[in-house]
Image 1 (cartoon, helix red, strand yellow):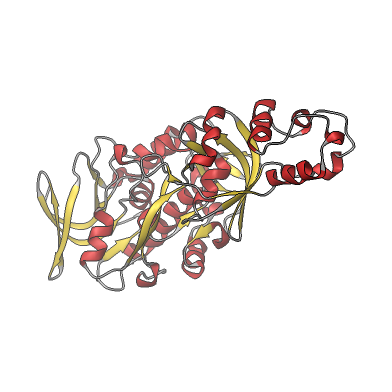
Image 2 (tube, helix red, strand yellow):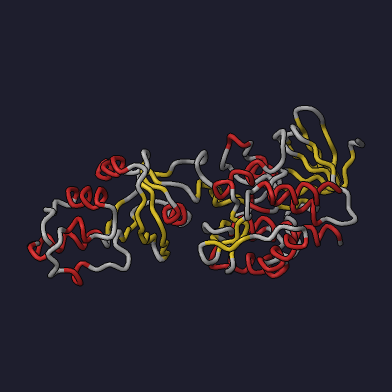
Length: 380
């Protein structure tokens, strides 16, 4: 292979493979540090891969809403679903609005591998450094040095380091003067303070909750885990949490006042497993007796289950996070091309940017949408 490349794409994940698939009439080389492409795709959504969502709007993302709007206008969820269906993959709608692969994530990956075959794929070629000199970019791998006219950073974030995640995207951005918004693990579980250590005794049990973080509300199941709490509602809430308290309604749609005359035990009335309800009654120092026998102060304590506030100790970290929030500042990226406003010929797509979606297929959609914008620009 000639060491001079027209377009170098760093990363063979969702955004890099989609870019390679959509790029017509241009030759690109995709660099991937792993021995196989799409490692993160295969583990997403429990191996089923939540591809996109029926409702995709800027409100579902943490990031500049104008930038997100401009990108989604070019290639939205409807365009993605049509593209997949034309290639034989008909995603199934689950949980009322989330689209998954019907069998496994490998169905999506297989399509991306086939469609991106028009480009050259270099595996076990981790890009360690990118430097621009004159009109050329120089890419250094452990094996070789390459020069490219244009470079697309599709390297993702810092999540899942075991799958090859690294900071090449952020380092490259900073080397040409870009601001990088502080990164943090997102869509990840919370560790807890000493006062909540009793959660660990409930490890493996799920319960329906509504979690409030500032102005944001996340409804769904919460999983008690050995390290703290996880599950869909918690992962969603982690997108908005920086530090300080969150508030959990452990009784969504259920109000103690509507059951105050009941003769049933409190632990039997609460809409959660008896093991969970007894643990909380003990924690709140409420006796487990018939509801109609509770004292006024005990009823007030019970209301604490609807507004249970505490500050997480932290998160489970990047190794357990589904995505990385923060990233390359989108104020310095052209939303119509995905090209840097600071460095001609340098492009950024996918998770490396300061755009992060909620749980529900939004991050894959962002990867594909941003890749589509970039492909259109590179084709001229």
